[in-house]
Length: 537
Image 1 (cartoon, rainbow, N blue to C red):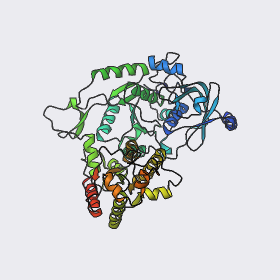
Image 2 (image 1 turned 120 degrees about the horizontal axis):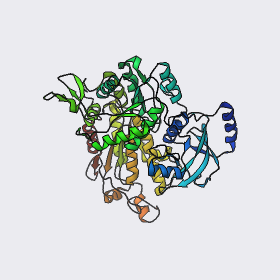
Image 3 (image 1 turned 60 degrees about the vertical axis):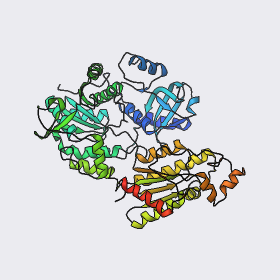
Image 4 (image 1 turned 120 degrees about the vertical axis):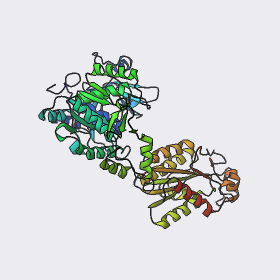
């Protein structure tokens, strides 16, 4: 193949209007309703506007989306793997009607496109789906990795100038290590093809910042590939499922960027046995999209030959080495050495900056329990002990402190208590993300709220839930503020433990009953737990 493969559907869509039309749309937008898009919707909009989703030029109507769900074909019979609509939880959108025009904006209010509604409908989950043609004014702005971003039009022009014809794409949402590196090189050499590295950087610096580590790791490893036959170009695509539909969508995107082949993983069981049905599916997808699909096999390091090989190509009797993903993460968290045969030092250095060992990462200690259980006293003493060492930046988010400074407008209804705990969780997650220690001591009576807070914080660091499981009889006997007496008298509605339930944690990292335990003893138990989990050294 001497020239780049044609775009999917034959023509590369350009969703951006000319400057004169853009100016007219901006003037019109003063009188249009607006819809702010989250980061996933922004990623889809960018792929639509830049042509990566060619031949689509807008969001599907309900009839088209249902047709695609049933037959995987567009109205003209073109294969398309899954529906694409603009889904929103906006209550205002539920009242919109076909024919209306809507300004699509990012979270900062910057207008990106105007959508002419052709269809509006609600699904069983309560989401409103919008379908219709879009006129793009600008692509979503990116302040990061600007030099590595290129639209399909721009990248195709660049590859054509370099004289590229056959191109194999590697799309990744995870870091590349030596096994992937060697397999990509081998594929490019065996197929006499050039290599396009496309890390998927769809995300958000506040809500989904994980792509930064992947991007920096690819910038680091890029220097190991042959400069003349390798191109690095970031793909503004959110993670998609590794099922048939997800693979087909990625293959279409790869083709629109100029790739005639795509390496795909996940076609093997954890034990390394090939799934025949998956192989047949790859052939079917490849035939419908017109892109060669190369299955990434289970790779093992053959020590005798000092190289990676597919497991089914290992010579009999050869000594092989393997490191599971779980073991790799365990070693990274513990600060243990990663074998040289597994990865490259510059890649590990990037990962260590984003995912430091536990004794260097931020963490949250989240105390929960009834009023009077001893949460605040233990939390304050723990903060003092940690600050005494001077090794960590510590922030105390006690319930009363937060109420005074962060949630002063909230009452004590169930809804307001829930909001208060989620605010504490958000602040703790920001502290944790930036390497600090957050110590929280709210009552936090509701199990689901605590689960949500845990998920929020564990995405950026460590989380240790401590249930101060002091019985209500002890708490009520202490009752320093007279709250239980007032609640029993009906003066305080929805009081936790009296007129509103406390849902005890299911699996806390630590449970402490302060009935017969001194504060120093309780704090020591928490410190020992933190040490056992690797957060303190």
